[in-house]
Image: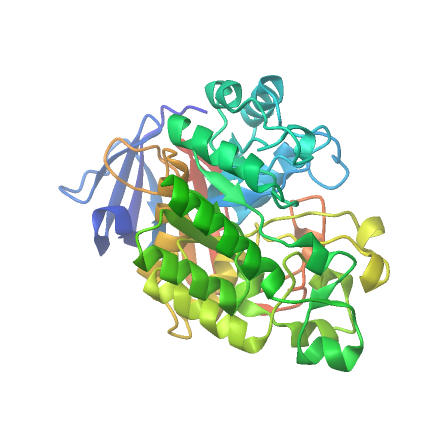
Length: 431
């Protein structure tokens, strides 16, 4: 990605938490980088982008995405997923390793970078903690780090072996890359399909208790504390989990956490109301209303460090079946910014600065990637967001290959309308 064109994004409200900026000003772009923000107006020989009445953010950073390539290109590819990303204002994604074959060796990491070099956004591979994602033997973490992995995860599966996780955490301290954990006690969750609570009881559905997540988080935080190692908790969904993470942070444990968009907006009651639509089936499952309220409070107090999509595409033929046999997962790259803005910012739960922190600034810092800021000299990865644009979610118009969204038909206010990556415009709905 490169560009010799000079741009100026003119008259938008620039929100850049990394530099404490929240003002109406201009952003100057040269040679694919941020030249400056504000200062003396100079529009000569520049392509003008009129952002009056719009919000200008550093491009969003989604650190939990499934791009399915290699192995399930019918569901998503790096190309189609990256196009979906820029349409949602996302300029950097970290892709999970549960592909076929998995990203558990250096050639696979290089394959992701090779494919990503032709993508619409920046694509960073997260490598497997264990070989084959089998939880039995540690992957060659040093080789994977040298090849360019930005973190390690067996996402989709928990690390059930405490000894294996201990070894992974020790290696992660030496190479200073995050261990990202899918937290699930399989003895409590296997063969179960939704959250165990009032809704599942009325429906008679086999269900997953919140302790299946919280119990594993407690174990892993204790290991991290014992080893003085960093640990990142993926897709936190339960109020009990939030309490454990909050207590650990207060005690100085090096733990960070993320929450997925759907867990911040939907509940287990929505599963029942949908008639058990398989597009409402994800792992962890949608929890109860009080879980959602606690998660939202955790965004405010800093217990949750990042918002992610856990973008998990499945083709229609896989999802078009009974709830109990459908695969877990929903897509989210093209709807995440709008949903968070409409349901959390416009309702006063978080402000716009906190939204950008959670969806851009902090995720970039967690993964130590060059993103999440409009600093002078930074990559020109930028999104323009129209806070007044009203639109209806229509999955038939998604750029991604799959359509498995629970938000079909939702009317939202606020939408990404323009995305630049490395000084090149890849999405433009400004006019």
